[in-house]
Amino acid sequence: MTEKDQAIPAVEGPLLAIELSQRSGGAAVIDDSGDLHTVGFEGGRRDRDDVLPGIHAVLARAGVAASTLRCVAVDVGPGGFTGLRISIAAAQAIAEVANATVVGVPGAVVAATATAALGETLGEIVVLSAAKAGTAWRTRLGRDDTDRCWRIIGDPGIIDRPDDRACVAVLADEHVPSELVRSTVSDSPVHSPSFDAAAVARIALGGGPDLLVHADPARLMPIYPREPEAVRRWRSRPAR
Image 1: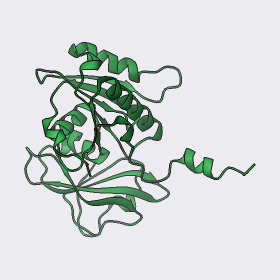
Image 2 (image 1 turned 90 degrees about the vertical axis):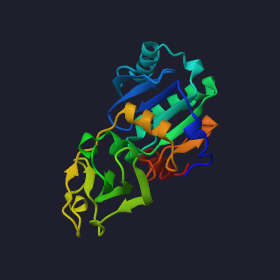
Image 3 (image 1 turned 30 degrees about the horizontal axis):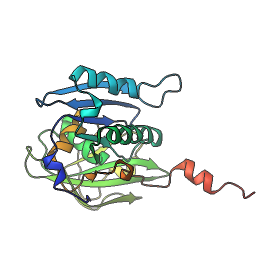
Image 4 (image 1 turned 60 degrees about the vertical axis):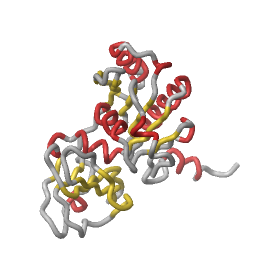
């Protein structure tokens, strides 16, 4: 899924990571010494912008200038349209100024890494997200060692029926239809997913084939399981 896998393991701090695929998000910085600094914020507020001030705050806390960043990582979804648009645009702008590599981290990998209930879990899991009209976006992931990162298995995609393949755990929020959470072949525990910028940072530094790595920030794109509603409405507008 990446055009230059070799770049990820070679990336060193300072690194900025941004998480805003959900309503609550945050930013993290790994400095030159490898220390992690984090700050949380809310996204999509109409009364004020907390995202850029939050990014400035965590950079200041880490003693890192934006212009010295070597890498900017961001959760690319699936997730909220507005949050993804804001966070990816911020990552692109900062990376452009710093001449830094951008790393897109799939949201399912972030969820699997950040959810504490999966800390000792091995085997295959399923992450269900982006629920709409009785469907959801399914991503299968697996690992055989708790010291290793979760890896995507097969191709993620939209489902409209229960899974017919066993897994050891399911991550799904309250918006995913219960009939999709249930498996036809196993009674797996279901956990609510967590997302945080620290996980985005750790995944980016860990490297791997699931990351979307670009030297050109403009090439970084979100993962949209469906056409965004705003785009759909634009396409369906009456002709003039």
